[in-house]
Length: 338
Picture 1 (spheres, helix red, strand yellow):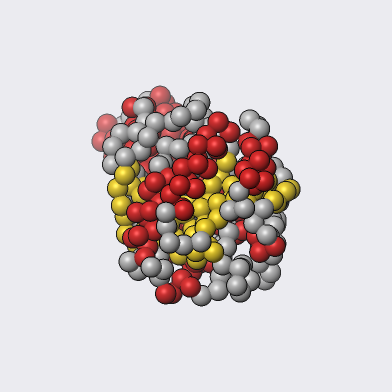
Picture 2 (picture 1 turned 30 degrees about the vertical axis):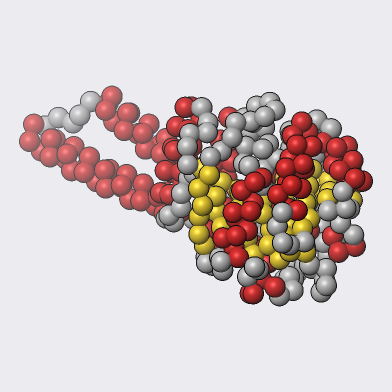
């Protein structure tokens, strides 16, 4: 059933150490769901005609998730655990899991059980039809009205800035082939979006729809401030298109200033009086505010350039358990040499 092009050796996996399917699960704030998640994953994966592994990446969760991961590794040889040295966020935790996994295919799955593990069978079936990437699209309301509104606004801004079409209801739940994994791992920027990088890659892609479940345990680990920071990171640092908007704004203000100068000159020639100081002060404040915003946007880009040119590792792994020798990645999140 496996896609022939994905059967080649992955760049991070020694020959003979492949498994058919890896499930990469970033773990944060989901200790209460790990046991039912493992049970449901095992049931689904054992029904597939393929060898498998479950890679649990603890992003320094504060609720004792690592202890549960250790117990799962001790009880199930198919489970491997990574514990990151510090909290680096979901996107880099996914990257760590993909860099460590051995699968000819890899499924990325959240730990909160809102995305049903049973969907993996459908994802794997569609990948076996020859698709390198299979996305899963949520087909019904799955969040509060406030979050749905914020989500629509976020993706509207993203579409305007990145100039690339993709569906805002597509989340991280997906399956990708080994050649997509290898291509994804060549992206080494710190500010990243797993889904947006996959859209950038291309490859043969399809989408399935599913009904998302409600959270089993606790609220989302993403606060409004964290979501806002993620949105800013995604909008500002996945494209330079925003800098084009800064230029357009500057041209618009220059044109407005020219028009205003013409109006003032004509009024002085015709009636011998210039407009009041109030309108001039308001205009100056407007121009000054826009200039400050544009300088701030440019400064953010410069700051990110400063961070990227340091070429620091994306993450460090504190502990690795399970999975055998082949589970250990060659480097702990290090950037490739020049």
